[in-house]
Image (cartoon, rainbow, N blue to C red; front, top):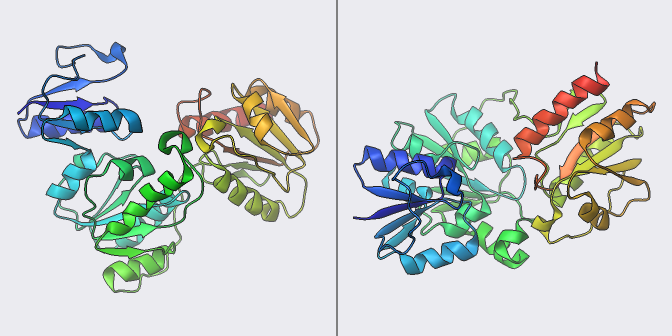
Length: 349
């Protein structure tokens, strides 16, 4: 059987490990030709592939084309996992707070059970295939759900839906349609409380605990500085502003925004609460057209923003970008780490 891995990122490499373990011959295709370091790579997409294993980041148009190339099937790592893994599978998705909900539910279940925390949260599912866990909590992105052949989840949870990833899906309706696929699970829920989810899944009441939180989700660096780098859409930005208004107790604070607004179709937003809206980065001019605020200013980079703040008396800051990283950073983690680094170098020195 001739197999092709399409996309050689984190997921593609996990698929490769799975194929090697199962003695399945394969070739690799990736748009980044700099990765072509061995004869395992190929430029030939139309080489009568029986099965194509597709990474989640592949765009919608290219994924559709693959269906006409593969002789038998186009699969994702999640298709393989759900067909072969024996654990009870819990899928969670939403525009916002899906990682946090997965993380908190994992903490509750892990007190009594062996649990995988996998998927879009950063751990490839095939690296945990039949690992001996009783439960697998799987975070799903809309792109993963869009490419999924069949939903074989035991439990599916839809937290919320707001406009996001329009650049991939083409419209909000298509995005919603993909998100709603989580509800094709055997059991479905819209619950967002991890204690109630625990009870729904196990039939038991969870003991109350102090949850650990993931970094860059409204992370309070100091009383006056909040790092919310995970904010990648207007819904999460609005959520952060409402909480910042409470946190700063009506004291003045500055909002820092950056990223690529194309993801949401350049929709407009009116931040209500911050005294100033400070916009930086390669997409600053595009963001400026989307943000309606009487006191906004554009900067070349984050360093310039923080240096100006350091010269002012008010140093209350909400760093909640509101957009994906675009051309400024590799991802929100790199962005959050860089913000913390500059904060300590410029403001907390």
